[in-house]
Amino acid sequence: MRASAWVHFDDGTDILIDTGPELRLQALAAGMNRLDAVLFTHAHADHTAGMDDIRAFNSLQQAVIPAYASAETAVSLHARFAYIFDEPPLSFFGGKPEMALRLVDGPFAVCGHSVVPVPVPHGRGGVLGFRFGTFAYVTDAKTVPPESRELLRGLDMLVLNGLHHRPHPVHLSIAEALEVIADVQPRRAFLTHMSDQIVHTTDEAALPPHVRLAYDGLRITVAE
Image 1 (cartoon, rainbow, N blue to C red):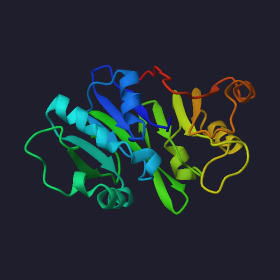
Image 2: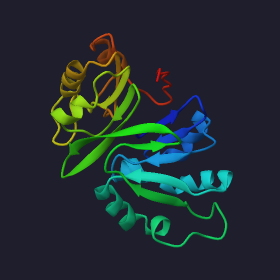
Image 3: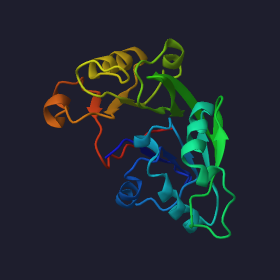
Image 4: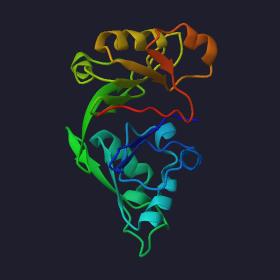
Protein backbone atom coordinates (compact mmCIF):
# COMPACT_ATOMS: atom_id res chain seq x y z
CA MET A 1 0.00 0.00 0.00
CA ARG A 2 1.00 3.64 -0.26
CA ALA A 3 3.31 5.14 2.36
CA SER A 4 1.91 6.77 5.50
CA ALA A 5 2.48 6.54 9.25
CA TRP A 6 0.40 6.49 12.43
CA VAL A 7 2.29 7.99 15.39
CA HIS A 8 0.85 6.92 18.75
CA PHE A 9 2.13 8.40 22.02
CA ASP A 10 1.92 6.81 25.45
CA ASP A 11 -0.50 9.51 26.62
CA GLY A 12 -2.96 8.46 23.91
CA THR A 13 -2.20 11.19 21.38
CA ASP A 14 -2.62 9.90 17.81
CA ILE A 15 -1.15 11.64 14.76
CA LEU A 16 -1.56 10.49 11.16
CA ILE A 17 1.05 11.38 8.55
CA ASP A 18 -0.63 11.54 5.10
CA THR A 19 -3.94 10.14 3.91
CA GLY A 20 -3.04 7.70 1.15
CA PRO A 21 -5.58 6.01 -1.15
CA GLU A 22 -5.78 2.93 1.12
CA LEU A 23 -6.39 4.90 4.32
CA ARG A 24 -9.59 3.03 5.21
CA LEU A 25 -7.94 -0.38 4.77
CA GLN A 26 -4.83 0.71 6.64
CA ALA A 27 -6.80 2.21 9.54
CA LEU A 28 -8.95 -0.91 9.94
CA ALA A 29 -5.92 -3.20 9.82
CA ALA A 30 -4.04 -1.09 12.38
CA GLY A 31 -7.00 -0.71 14.73
CA MET A 32 -7.04 3.09 14.57
CA ASN A 33 -10.11 4.52 16.31
CA ARG A 34 -9.22 8.19 16.84
CA LEU A 35 -7.09 11.01 15.47
CA ASP A 36 -5.78 14.16 17.14
CA ALA A 37 -4.17 15.59 14.00
CA VAL A 38 -3.24 14.89 10.39
CA LEU A 39 0.14 16.00 9.05
CA PHE A 40 0.60 16.32 5.29
CA THR A 41 4.04 15.85 3.76
CA HIS A 42 2.83 17.19 0.38
CA ALA A 43 -0.24 17.15 -1.85
CA HIS A 44 0.50 14.37 -4.34
CA ALA A 45 -2.39 11.93 -4.80
CA ASP A 46 -0.56 8.93 -3.35
CA HIS A 47 -0.36 10.87 -0.07
CA THR A 48 -3.79 12.56 -0.01
CA ALA A 49 -6.35 10.61 -2.06
CA GLY A 50 -7.81 8.78 0.96
CA MET A 51 -8.69 12.01 2.75
CA ASP A 52 -12.43 11.44 2.50
CA ASP A 53 -12.15 8.60 5.02
CA ILE A 54 -11.19 11.10 7.72
CA ARG A 55 -14.95 11.69 8.07
CA ALA A 56 -15.25 8.42 9.99
CA PHE A 57 -13.02 9.89 12.70
CA ASN A 58 -15.08 13.11 12.72
CA SER A 59 -18.15 10.99 13.34
CA LEU A 60 -16.52 8.90 16.07
CA GLN A 61 -15.06 11.91 17.86
CA GLN A 62 -17.79 14.46 17.05
CA ALA A 63 -15.06 17.00 16.41
CA VAL A 64 -13.15 18.86 13.73
CA ILE A 65 -9.66 17.38 13.25
CA PRO A 66 -6.73 19.78 12.79
CA ALA A 67 -4.51 19.29 9.77
CA TYR A 68 -1.02 20.71 9.24
CA ALA A 69 0.66 21.49 5.92
CA SER A 70 3.10 23.88 4.30
CA ALA A 71 1.70 26.91 2.47
CA GLU A 72 2.56 25.25 -0.84
CA THR A 73 0.70 22.08 0.06
CA ALA A 74 -2.25 24.04 1.47
CA VAL A 75 -2.83 25.76 -1.88
CA SER A 76 -3.12 22.38 -3.62
CA LEU A 77 -5.35 20.95 -0.89
CA HIS A 78 -7.74 23.88 -1.14
CA ALA A 79 -7.88 23.48 -4.93
CA ARG A 80 -8.46 19.73 -4.93
CA PHE A 81 -10.49 19.31 -1.75
CA ALA A 82 -12.48 22.53 -1.63
CA TYR A 83 -15.51 20.69 -0.24
CA ILE A 84 -13.41 19.89 2.84
CA PHE A 85 -11.49 23.09 3.41
CA ASP A 86 -13.56 25.86 1.79
CA GLU A 87 -17.20 24.85 2.20
CA PRO A 88 -19.02 25.53 5.48
CA PRO A 89 -19.17 22.60 7.91
CA LEU A 90 -22.26 20.41 7.84
CA SER A 91 -24.71 20.42 10.71
CA PHE A 92 -23.65 16.90 11.66
CA PHE A 93 -20.28 15.13 11.78
CA GLY A 94 -19.52 12.35 9.33
CA GLY A 95 -21.20 13.67 6.19
CA LYS A 96 -17.85 14.92 4.91
CA PRO A 97 -14.39 15.32 6.39
CA GLU A 98 -14.18 18.32 8.73
CA MET A 99 -10.56 19.46 9.00
CA ALA A 100 -9.08 22.76 10.17
CA LEU A 101 -6.00 23.43 8.05
CA ARG A 102 -3.09 25.08 9.85
CA LEU A 103 0.00 26.34 8.04
CA VAL A 104 3.40 25.04 9.07
CA ASP A 105 6.25 27.55 9.01
CA GLY A 106 8.34 26.18 11.87
CA PRO A 107 8.14 23.84 14.86
CA PHE A 108 4.69 23.36 16.37
CA ALA A 109 2.98 21.18 18.97
CA VAL A 110 0.14 18.65 18.85
CA CYS A 111 -1.41 17.92 22.25
CA GLY A 112 1.81 19.05 23.91
CA HIS A 113 4.11 16.98 21.68
CA SER A 114 6.74 18.92 19.75
CA VAL A 115 6.80 18.45 15.97
CA VAL A 116 9.78 19.73 13.97
CA PRO A 117 9.23 20.05 10.20
CA VAL A 118 12.10 18.83 8.02
CA PRO A 119 11.93 20.39 4.52
CA VAL A 120 13.27 18.41 1.56
CA PRO A 121 13.00 18.94 -2.24
CA HIS A 122 10.80 16.70 -4.39
CA GLY A 123 10.64 17.50 -8.09
CA ARG A 124 9.16 20.94 -8.71
CA GLY A 125 7.95 21.30 -5.16
CA GLY A 126 8.86 20.64 -1.59
CA VAL A 127 7.98 18.05 1.02
CA LEU A 128 7.89 18.26 4.79
CA GLY A 129 9.30 15.45 6.85
CA PHE A 130 8.51 15.49 10.57
CA ARG A 131 10.54 14.84 13.70
CA PHE A 132 8.98 13.81 17.03
CA GLY A 133 11.62 13.55 19.73
CA THR A 134 14.05 10.80 18.67
CA PHE A 135 11.88 9.62 15.73
CA ALA A 136 11.69 11.21 12.28
CA TYR A 137 9.72 10.40 9.14
CA VAL A 138 10.89 11.72 5.77
CA THR A 139 9.35 10.59 2.50
CA ASP A 140 9.57 11.56 -1.19
CA ALA A 141 12.88 13.39 -0.82
CA LYS A 142 15.20 13.67 -3.79
CA THR A 143 17.96 15.04 -1.58
CA VAL A 144 18.28 15.99 2.08
CA PRO A 145 19.97 19.43 2.26
CA PRO A 146 22.60 20.13 4.92
CA GLU A 147 20.24 22.25 7.04
CA SER A 148 17.68 19.45 7.08
CA ARG A 149 20.32 16.85 7.90
CA GLU A 150 21.12 18.84 11.01
CA LEU A 151 17.48 18.41 12.08
CA LEU A 152 17.86 14.63 11.73
CA ARG A 153 20.85 14.08 14.01
CA GLY A 154 20.59 12.29 17.36
CA LEU A 155 17.71 10.03 16.29
CA ASP A 156 16.81 6.63 17.64
CA MET A 157 14.81 5.91 14.47
CA LEU A 158 14.72 7.46 11.00
CA VAL A 159 12.20 6.42 8.36
CA LEU A 160 13.43 7.60 4.94
CA ASN A 161 12.32 7.00 1.37
CA GLY A 162 14.41 4.82 -0.91
CA LEU A 163 12.65 4.10 -4.20
CA HIS A 164 14.88 1.54 -5.90
CA HIS A 165 18.50 1.04 -6.93
CA ARG A 166 18.77 3.11 -10.10
CA PRO A 167 18.76 6.91 -9.84
CA HIS A 168 15.39 8.66 -10.07
CA PRO A 169 14.73 12.33 -10.92
CA VAL A 170 12.58 13.12 -7.85
CA HIS A 171 13.20 10.34 -5.30
CA LEU A 172 16.21 9.08 -3.37
CA SER A 173 17.64 5.83 -4.65
CA ILE A 174 18.59 3.14 -2.14
CA ALA A 175 22.27 4.17 -2.37
CA GLU A 176 21.40 7.86 -1.91
CA ALA A 177 19.22 7.06 1.08
CA LEU A 178 22.01 5.00 2.64
CA GLU A 179 24.39 7.94 2.20
CA VAL A 180 22.00 10.20 4.12
CA ILE A 181 21.62 7.58 6.86
CA ALA A 182 25.40 7.18 7.14
CA ASP A 183 25.75 10.94 7.53
CA VAL A 184 23.02 11.66 10.12
CA GLN A 185 23.72 8.38 11.99
CA PRO A 186 20.39 7.31 13.50
CA ARG A 187 20.59 4.28 15.77
CA ARG A 188 18.11 2.50 13.50
CA ALA A 189 16.56 3.24 10.11
CA PHE A 190 13.81 1.92 7.86
CA LEU A 191 13.48 2.58 4.14
CA THR A 192 9.97 3.28 2.86
CA HIS A 193 8.19 4.38 -0.34
CA MET A 194 9.89 1.59 -2.33
CA SER A 195 8.94 0.57 -5.85
CA ASP A 196 8.03 -2.91 -7.07
CA GLN A 197 11.62 -3.27 -8.29
CA ILE A 198 12.65 -4.02 -4.69
CA VAL A 199 12.63 -7.68 -3.61
CA HIS A 200 12.28 -7.56 0.16
CA THR A 201 14.29 -10.62 1.18
CA THR A 202 17.26 -10.23 -1.14
CA ASP A 203 17.52 -6.44 -1.07
CA GLU A 204 17.19 -6.24 2.72
CA ALA A 205 19.98 -8.79 3.13
CA ALA A 206 22.38 -6.40 1.37
CA LEU A 207 21.64 -3.47 3.72
CA PRO A 208 23.69 -2.48 6.79
CA PRO A 209 22.48 -4.29 9.94
CA HIS A 210 20.82 -1.18 11.41
CA VAL A 211 18.87 -0.43 8.20
CA ARG A 212 15.79 -2.47 7.29
CA LEU A 213 13.01 -2.29 4.70
CA ALA A 214 9.58 -1.17 5.91
CA TYR A 215 6.42 -3.11 5.10
CA ASP A 216 2.65 -2.79 5.47
CA GLY A 217 1.62 -2.99 9.12
CA LEU A 218 5.13 -2.50 10.51
CA ARG A 219 5.07 -1.35 14.16
CA ILE A 220 8.08 0.37 15.72
CA THR A 221 8.60 1.32 19.38
CA VAL A 222 10.72 4.43 19.93
CA ALA A 223 11.81 5.98 23.21
CA GLU A 224 11.00 9.70 23.42
